[in-house]
Image (cartoon, rainbow, N blue to C red; front, side):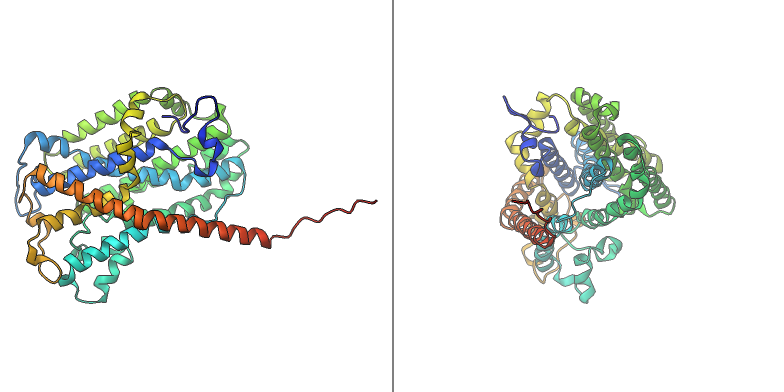
Length: 439
């Protein structure tokens, strides 16, 4: 799938509506990643994946299922590459082309996309599953302020997956700061290529920070959760997204100066998908760790995973967005109606999956002011396929309701607000003087 979809006998569709240019295959990629993570999380709770978190080694209940589902959590990194690409692309376009960046609505769009659905889900699980955990006001405010990832003792039932929300919010703040810090240096480049590569100054810094955090967290016994739940561990993935954003804008501004790898990816999308699939299978085999387990148990295993995560995320996204001829395989897998719909509601799919498992597995007297058990303590209480079906159907229902009744109306309202503000701003600008013409 090329960057823009084309119509027979006409120009690219995105050229007709540049403000609404979409990477269609990327929407499908979001859906694939959300489903992959749902599968692996269900596998953890159903016992298909083994664990060492309950006082001893509990083996997987299915060798084949443990092998395949154990590798799927690698898809979480793709979301952070997408964040790096989409947030940084506007800055890249501005600096590479030497044009002012349109700032109207940036903050509004990000806030409305990230927080309302999260807050609704938090309120539901707070009332239904966590009332007994509230000792003071801070217990309620901590998740609202996106600080719960820094206080593991206060984790809430149904909120297990929400470590990504604070991470995303922090990257939303960090990336504009990085662009601002490099603006003067990058703008001095004499050519589009020079400006593009000067914009990459933060990239090696982010990679170094991610590797340093990997070493520090493991050498100090902080565990895998500290590695990835804190934003430092995912800085390399965000840096990859930044690089792809810069390459794409350079290709638009000066195709001859664009990296050859970008053009190569556009001509060989299936090859890049094959590389990503190979990384996935290697991760399923858990080199340096144990097949069929829910975690990585050595620095070597985590180092290998770190590399696989970067390669898989980069090759998948390049296969989707690199300019070039379409791929029938990508069109069939990533742009069919079903996966595009899942991609559309993917944020809700991601947010609600643990809550749905809680609702299904807890005893009736556990809700509201009862005492619900953490999911890890009631794991393996039902079959994988039963729990998978319930979680998938329940999550899609809740996500669809969230998207059509909350997320999309709020985003549409945000766009109207942005347009009104832009119109008011334009009205206050001084009009050019009209020169009098002698009669």
